[in-house]
Image 1 (cartoon, rainbow, N blue to C red):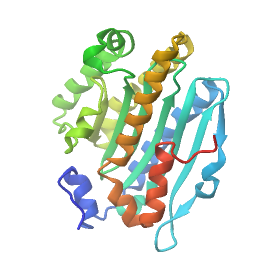
Image 2 (tube, one colour):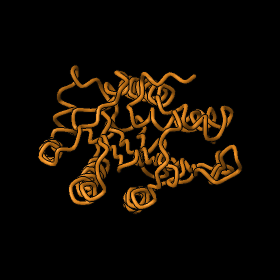
Image 3 (cartoon, rainbow, N blue to C red):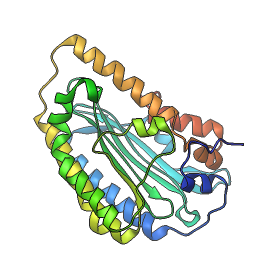
Image 4 (cartoon, rainbow, N blue to C red):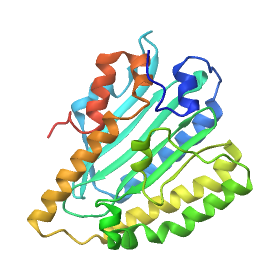
Length: 271
């Protein structure tokens, strides 16, 4: 039996097989957000597709029905190390998980950009400029890159409270510790998502793209080596310790679920 102690009740309900709701309308809305963001990213950054997982551009569940897509990208003439563009789940059966996560390389110290969307059964959203250093030991990094987003972050907290929407708190302490001080995350009704959340997500994306284009190169070899080592470790831990991994295993079986995990943390790539 899977351990549901580290799952929110929404994830645990799906894992237990107790929730079956058609969330197609919500899925289409959050997928549209992801796709519009991806258009902005592609128009702004020079990228090339890594085709190591080309056989998973579309993949099926254990019943042979389409259940997901996986594509990966790296930087061409941009400081991008690894991009995950994926989705898994069936909206007619409640749970879906949509990713667009962008990890930068060690040539710059701009935050990575983590994003996820889905249906639980309301609209799930997560966007976070992930710090490249430990925040408490590098307050200048937080002030430079994250503090400009604080007003947006605080306004969403006020709006959630005024609307009586329950704040989203990951059940697992490790996952909560992975969120930056300005991470936006929640499970909200669709109307609230469209009016209050989506515009803030696009503001975060535009802020991040500006940071990337204005980034100064990290010249010191030791500093670059430290960035790279931390990036690899954090990426691996976040992916391997994701408490929702058992849901993917239920959908596609352990061998494919394990491979998806390897791809997510760039352990399976062409270069």
